[in-house]
Image (cartoon, rainbow over all chains, first blue to last red; front, side, top):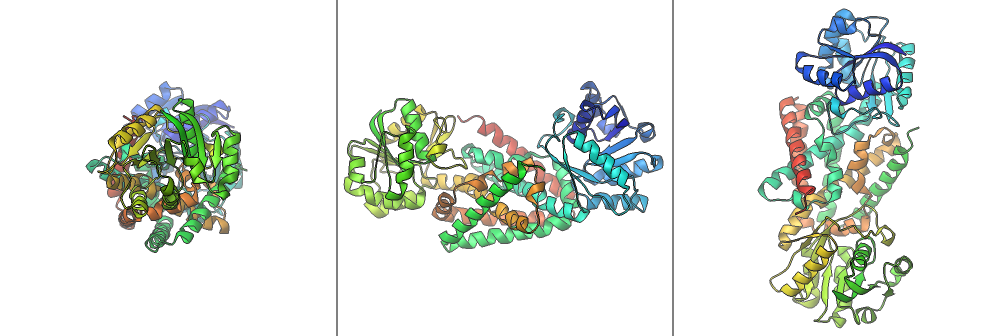
Length: 293
Length: 293
C-alpha cells in the first residue's frame, strides 16, 4: 500500500503498527522520527527490526514517506504538527493514534489554520499497561476496533485508504464524529483509568502505614491493572478531554453518594437492584466486546 | 483430620472447600446442610461428587459431623447459628468463610450470648465472579490467603486445627483481629467492588441510550470483572461492613474531587505525580501479591 511508512513516536502503539504493517506487507520500508531524547528507544527499535531507519530531522524523515502516523502522547501532537508543517506533502497520507480527538483537531487548526484534508484523525482502541517499543506486538490490533473521526474537509479517499490499512492489520473500522468519540472514550476508558489511579493511590498511602495489599485478592489485581498505565500518556489524555471527563466524574461521584446513602439506610433491596443491574450490564458488555463487528 | 465435614451453603466457596478437603484426604465424608430452596443445588453437588449426602434437617446433618463450615452469604449467618444452636457440640470444630468478621461475631453473640470457644471465625481471600457449586474448583484456595480472626475466648487448639486444615488445602494462614480484618478488606475488596458496580451501572445506563460498550477496550474488561459478582453476597457484605466502607467511600470521593480540581486547573504536574504514585503503588502490590508468604 505504501512505499515508506513513517512512525512518529515508536513506542508500544507505534511499534505495534510498524510490526503489523511489515508483517502484512503494507509498506516496503518503516522509519521513525523522534527527538534527541528518543534516540535510545529508536536505536532499540532498529535493533529489534521494528524499523529500518530513524531520524531526528523531519525533512529527512518525510522525504519519501507516503504515510505518516503520529503515535506520541496527545499533549505533544501540536508540536509535531509544527515540526511537520514546512515539509507537509499533499500526496502523503497523515494520521494519528491519539486517544482524544477534539484536542488533536484543535492542535491541527492552531498550526495549519484549517485541518489539512490529507490528515485523517484516528484512534485504535487497544492499549496495554506496558509501554515502549519492547512491548510492541504484531497482533495488538487484531480483533480490535479502529475509530476514524473524519471532518467535513477530510479527503474521503484518504479515509478509505487509512481504513483499508487498519482492516488489513486486523482491526474493525468504525467512523464517528469527533464529539461522539470523545464522549464514548471518556466513559469507557478515561473515567475507568482515573478511578483505578485514584483507588490504587488511596490504598497505596494506606499500605505505607499498615500492610493491606498483602490481603488483596485476585479481583483487585485485575481491577487495578490499568493503574499501571503510562503517567505521561494519561496526564495528556485527561487534560485533552477534560470537558468530557469532568461531568462524568461528577456523575460518578453522585452515584457513589447514592450508594453510600443506601448503606446508611440499610436499604438491602436497592443495593441488590444496583448490583444486579451492573451485573447484567457487564454481561451485555461482554457479549458486545467478544463480537467486534 | 476429620470424620465428617459438613458444609452449610454448597456454592463456589463451600464446594471448593469440599473438593479440596476430599482431594487432600482431610475428611472421610463430606455432607451439606441447606434449606428447601437449596435442594436443586445440593442435588447437583451430589451428582458432581462434591458431597456424599445432603440434608435440610440440622439434627441429621450435625450428627457425626466433627467439622462444620458455614459458607452462606454473611447476611444469613445469624439464622444459621439459630438453626445450629440446639445441636451445638463442644467436640465439633465450627468455622465460617464470611467476607466480613465483625458481623459474624455479632451474630454469634446475639444467638449464643457469648461466642462459643469452638467457633473459629475465618475468611479465605479467594473469590471469583462466578458462583454456584458448578463453579467450585479443587485449587481455588491454593496459594491464597486464609485469615483467622480469633477472639480472646476462642479455643487455641481449634484455631491450630483450622489453620492446619487450610494450610493442607494450599493456603497461607494469617491471624489478625476482627477489626483489622474488616478495615483491610473494606479497602482491598469491598470498596473496589462498589466502584466496579457503580461504574458499570452508570455506563450501562448510558449504553442503553447510545452504544458505548462496543468501543470499550480490554482494560475495561478486566477493570469491570468484579461487577459480575453475586449481588446477594455483595448486598450482605456491604451492609455487614458499612461502618468501615462508608468512611472509605468518602475518602475516595474526596480523592476524585481533588483530581477533578487538578483537571479544572490544568495542573499537569500534579496529575503526573498522582498517576506515577499509583503506578508505583501497583508495582508494590504486584510484588506483594505474587509472593503470599
